Length: 228
Image (cartoon, rainbow, N blue to C red):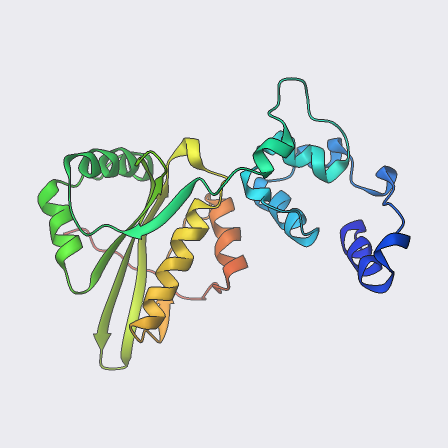
């Protein structure tokens, strides 16, 4: 049993005033955590019920989990933990020049070969009955993530696909991709989708862990593609 789960169990079983402090030696060390992926650190923080852990930088999060201070120069943990959510997820209903520029910048991080979508392309997506463009936007209006949800009916029922999920490099590790995906799932369920499918390259390790955490299951199937 990890020290996180043991600590939580003691909190449930004993009065708060009598709860013994968890010794730092019982926690994983900074050295043990340094090599872990951010998604794994988030899973540990979730298990330990740390508040607003997604707002912490990697070094700060390791410091909290290990009980060892972060290196000099790191932002104060308490200050960041008290900060409000830094982004919101909404449907893009209108296409502006700023949106076109930001989507183009995001798509260049997703694919080096696909051409940037034009304003007309985005208009077709936002006005289409089957397609929904979700964007994650910071407080200053900067789009830091995007996802396209496709919902369609076939003879076996209503299906949905999640496509072109991308988060700006500087905003990764803050839960943007998960927030976009969960909102897409909510909308797919509202529209009666029986299943929601997506594909993800094996190299996207953090994304694959996130999809599994949400509840997606990897299917044993072949994916075929024909270039036209």
